[in-house]
Length: 122
Image (tube, rainbow, N blue to C red; front, side, top):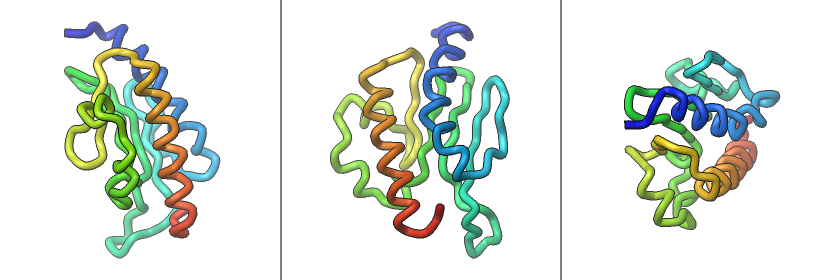
C-alpha cells in the first residue's frame, strides 16, 4: 500500500487541476486532505451544483469531476488507462503520481468547466 507521503504528493499534484477554476466557483473545503468546489448554480433541491473535489482516502486519492456525470459524452474520448481509474460515474482514483494521466485529466477538467459554462452553471 502507498505511504501517506505518496498520497500527499498525489493530492498536491491534483489539487491545482481544480484550483485553477476556484475564482469562478465556491471553495467549500480547503484542507490538507480535502479540496471541494461547488458552482453558484442552485439546483431544485436548493443545494449548489457540485463541480469537483480532491480527497485523500484510506487507500487512494480520489478526484471527483461532476461535469462527466452531467455530460457523459465527455468520457467518449477518454483513454483506456484513465477509464480504468474510474470508480463510479465521476470519480477517478490514484495511488501514485502519473503525469500522463494527470495531463489528460487536466484537459478533461477544462472541457468539463467549459461545458458547465455553456450550460449556464458557471
